[in-house]
Image (tube, rainbow, N blue to C red; front, top):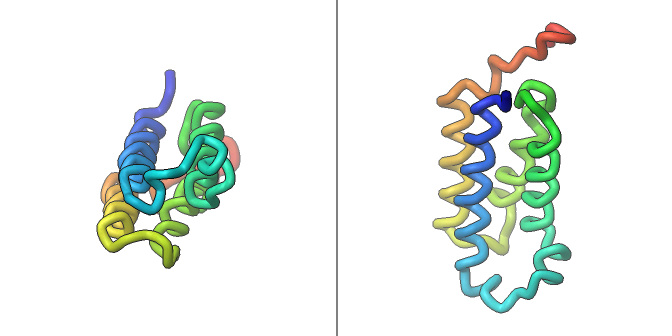
Length: 108
């Protein structure tokens, strides 16, 4: 059975990526552009990682936080998109996905 926390992160990916794609700057992008766009590519890589694990604790929190923080730091995103990325990070904190994650195999 897949950890429900993975679904939380996947949902936030969908929200932020959907907003990025609706933004006028990305409106004219083709699928090839999406592969070359660093922000969209980062989220695509994260989706692949999440699809290959069973527990969110199998990966370090910085792995699933990185794409959201890249959006926050990007000068190419608008305020509302940055706000969505920050809301996602806040949700991860509120739901305990960051900080309380201990891998049962390693104890860390």
